[in-house]
Image (cartoon, rainbow, N blue to C red; front, side, top):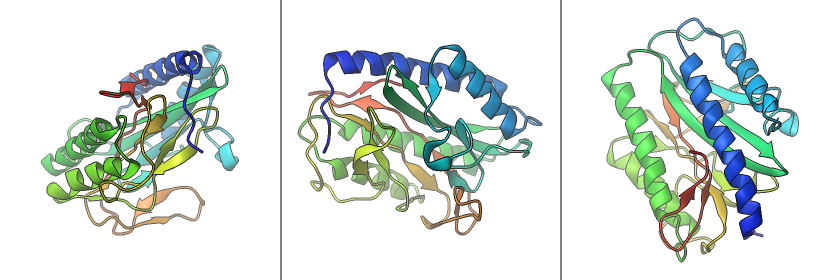
Length: 247
């Protein structure tokens, strides 16, 4: 079932979405060579809880941290730890909050100082894929119109969207229907209606789209160990352009 959120529910999600955006802005300022990913996680926990919200990922299906930190070839669900970032790395930071009973969720990929032109291009294309996805998220369209926009944006530039992980609906739970694949066919899937709240989240790989999960049971990496970039917003479907909650 895909929920249609009331104006009262959306008001709560706007406040939560603003906190997600503020947390990501705070973490972006902290990211630098030498900092441990665990330190970023602790900063996120303190920031979110100090404002009366809860980190949505902490304890979710046993996940041990408040944010996901996915470095270089890690696609998604990287666990913060003792790794120290170094110049030339990229780090995907994915986080969600629970505010007044409602979840919001967003992700960004941050370059650490100077990165190669190829890496910069990967980040640009991944962000363009998110923008293309959001442009399709309007009343009357279908879920896989979003998927096709992500896939075609990546492939037009020689990159690949991963098929193994998907975007999702969001509301009282962090993951709700519908699933939003990163690969799809136009005109397929459930029809979008005003009031649906969605999280498209393109994960774009520099090599192939194939991934595997490490022995920790969480961290997904590219099978060929090529770089991967990840962006996400929580958005509300309208008759026109979607409303972005996580800015």
